[in-house]
Picture (cartoon, helix red, strand yellow):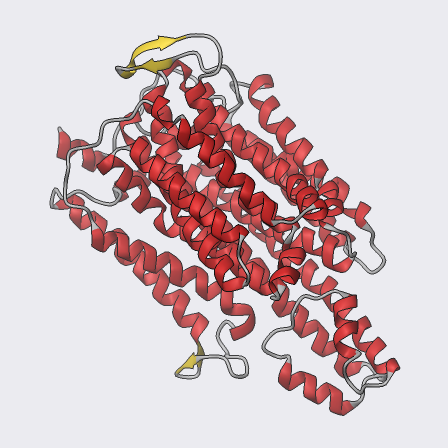
Length: 563
């Protein structure tokens, strides 16, 4: 696998499967169906990010509430992705794909009709997340089952490009629909697209189910519990505190519950790996084979995927907030300011494989990460008082180039690490790492944003002579658990209902405006730091082109079991 650019799939399997006859020329309708599924799965988060403020206002909640919904959506996908891949192996990938589409469509309709945050979380975060966990690993396996070997590089490129198009077009689609109609119509549109895919799902050649073996329910529970506890702990860190509990926050033995959630979550993940290793050693069917992580190419690709989506989620969470809340732009104006990222992302994802098909994946990914780092640093430096929307144009273009470069390489890196027979397991792990990165990125960046905003605001009001000491004291008690990320207009509206004099109200608004920028810059600084860490780990990626005759092999333990 070398190229991830969308190109003509030259070999589409006939009724006999991937190794059967092939048809040349033209894109397969089957691939377009699978690519459409990938597009819809990826569209949700990028659409929602530009509409955060509109959704929050419509549902009577806060930015933090919508952050929770975004995080839980990606968390549910991450927590159930390995299980979804294994279910596909047991009952068949086409059936799993179809069931996932039905669940996803039900979630989209519930989301479109949601009257409050709770229903939004049930529809979007839970039902859509569960549907996506069934769909995405199945897509990886169905590509291998429907495309002959010589056409799979182009086929996986088409799938990757569909995701890239969704990331790129999502902000503009979401902005336009939210501005001229309602964000709810985006989810209605998803129901329509999913319905069309379901009408033609029988055209997809099914990969035969594996031999029925006892499902690893305990492993599935460990994976869900471990990932959920870890991300939920990070999500609550901004309001509960990392170690020292904030006022009225839950704690155990004087230590914040966040600390215990993260520690227990990581221990459960460790127990999951040990449990799966023991199942393999005793010749029992595992949820996944831990020996897969001994493959340096696979592990390097998964880590790079994690960091890409962590960084991507952090940027897509913070910049729309700057544009919509700080500058007061509507959803369409926000989407237009993100257009440079959309254009350069698509250009990079499409042109890199065409212009340098034999390039070193390690070199391309590192260049991409350096571009993302440069864009993030420019944002940190540029988000200052008086900064306008134009400050994001060049950074967005740089970050888009970087994301596109990574998208052009990483899918081929992981998929080509093992034989086609393991594509479902590779897809499950790949999507687990991407969604775990996205959920952790949104949770951590959001927590840092709210935490630093609160600290900067409380520090500012305590030294502002225009704000009486009794007001500062009251603010320190009532707001230490976390200050909502609100616009000047929203804060002025709330202060107008108090008996504070106008000069005090004005001073509080000014301090909040300054604290918002501190919070955004601190959050983006964390993104930059994680990008540096990602550059270090990029050394694990292959340094030679993936084009060649070398055949991937199964993990050593698996060869021993099946040989």
